[in-house]
Length: 107
Image (cartoon, rainbow, N blue to C red; front, side, top):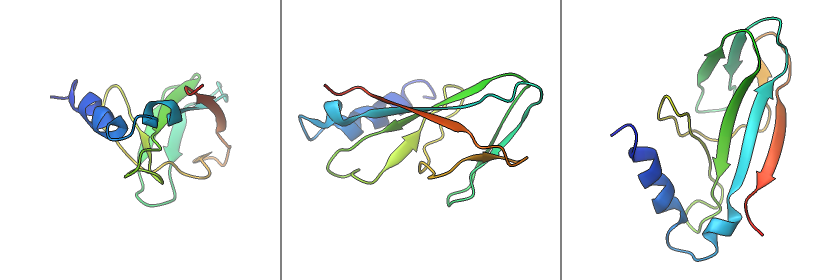
């Protein structure tokens, strides 16, 4: 169930509108402070914490602009099922900002 459930949620998100597939935006967050590990603490609600070992960490965020999910932004971890609201600002617990890259799948 862990493997196919995110795919089911994703397909439900993009179904219902023919242009929904072109409105998917892919976000990637990565901390470039490679000298130490740390935690990402999301201060907006709902709150969650994810940790990484020393090195560069990357998290992929997906946004679906479908009719029912116009304001919804969600995160998917390959090791866990974790759908959460995309935060406006992400900082490490030591106060370092995380860089955001935006990739648009649409044409």
